[in-house]
Length: 296
Image 1 (cartoon, one colour):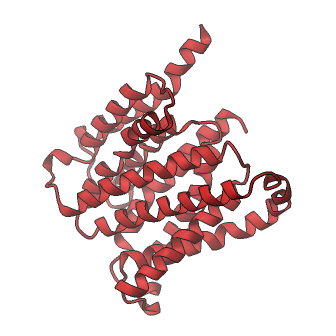
Image 2 (cartoon, one colour):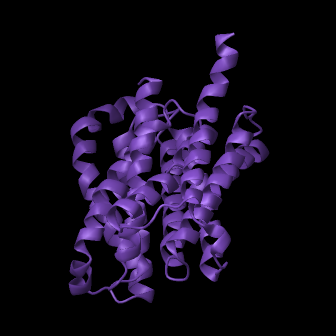
Image 3 (spheres, one colour):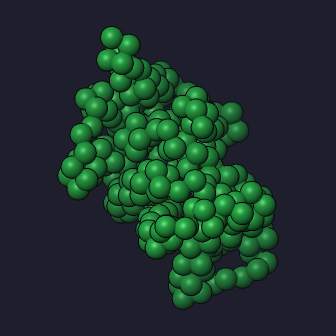
């Protein structure tokens, strides 16, 4: 797979994630956050698993010939990270607004390189750090956070950002060892669906009629975001290391803002446009500066 395909996959999955913020928020009018995630990710699993069976089952013997245990452990860690990140984000939307959630979610951008540096002892290209700063400034302007009040839900989003970070890092590890993106996508969505279902049974009312009321939000967030977007992320990280990938994924806020402007008629101010500009600059720096050294 070429770097161009990986970049396109990263941009497409980020676009889907950004537009899903609206579905995540409106999809909890009649059901709880864990019920929403349980059904959302099970729908995602159903969308992916036929493709995994069709295209990857025949590769299992070769891929798992030497080491199935590592795949199982990493898949579990990825699934747990996705469950905790998505659950904390979804619950947080009950206690904070979309703008705050969008801003604090991109805290995974600095968390990824810091975790890699501290725990994996791997060098990070210097271009990552100014790119991270630009993305944080952009997120601050994009979400009008300076007019916001910090709430309890914001703490949950920051904690969730930590698990989004580990999800990106573990995905970056597993793609270097196995070429089973559809299988990994199906496994992680199933893990999230099952864990969310168990929590929903304990703490929420799992009412089928109420689920049907949110069916359109669930289908969009499930098939496109919970299913195919996370598979696209795996394809993206085949040729993009975790720290630059996290910077590209910060475009989620840009796409969320554009979607809110287009679908909800929200006004884009000069600060919002500047925020988009800063994030775009951060993404471009993270991708272009490492090429300068190679060119010379």
